[in-house]
Length: 458
Image (cartoon, rainbow, N blue to C red; front, top):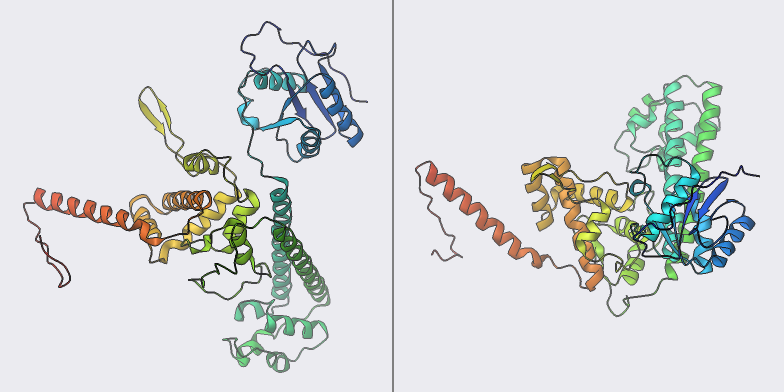
């Protein structure tokens, strides 16, 4: 049984109680501590084990104490079972950021933590973190698991390359992908006992740029049994990961089919994608773009820089409903893509963005990097910010703008229109002309505008 600690009850005369039916929970791996108001039970702080029966007993005790709202910290993944039990029982659960409640010293025990959470929550000083609906959480769990499998598969590819290096086989230096048709055929032949470089090089696919002579020269090496053993196991592990990834794709598509439709793809078909590319190896093996268009009601891939994978991250981490965020500024702040202004005494101390580990923000930053060659307003904006602020800040600024565009499209249901930014381009041009006029005037020159045949000079 867990060791009991003597609780230090807070004074009942403490002012500022806005939620009298509030409780606080300190979550751990093997036990949880729950604090309720002092007048609800002779023992207002209790400890429960994390077995399912004990968690159900804790929920029943909270119900008997007349609790309506519960606050708990997001400790690893240990909070998830109790959160789901409380939510299913009918409690209003607030998942709070640990950083918001750790600023007061002297509260380093589990008992003091749960009491402090209970007091802050009853005083209305805690805000619950955003947690999407269960259907979105299901997609998110499988997608994150799939991302882990992709990383594991890439590790096995590195093991295969290491085994080839140790045998001085330079195959992965003359072809771009050893897991493609040519690489797989040659490695399988090597594992079956073939050692003749001329025979192995004839397995080259016609699309490979390297010639047969180059591949044959790269396959002359020292075939050691221990390295062949690791190569065989790494290839088998890589293929097993690919099978698991394919199973994840099937499961994700089934859950996507269950989402409500906001648009009929038959009545309003999708436009052809602007940027066509060959399907990458780790892309989902179904019509992801069509599902996202049906669920969101708009095609996010029409926004420059965004593709189906980026839009899928938005769905899996947030969902199609952004009503939880009051406006676009609140949405961008939650992503950590806006300046975190620190002002004291009228002096700006810092405007750096907050350090936030958010998968949507990471996806938008990657999308912003792809704008460096885009001939659109967003591409021009990114290049302008890169010249002015440098690449890191330009990426953040472009990701900020992408987030605002996504919020507008999903909340209004309007399709993306590049012409919307025409006025922004006009204002930017006016600003540039004014700066040039000012600089020329300071240097004693006068600018004369030369009109094209399609323009009329003022």
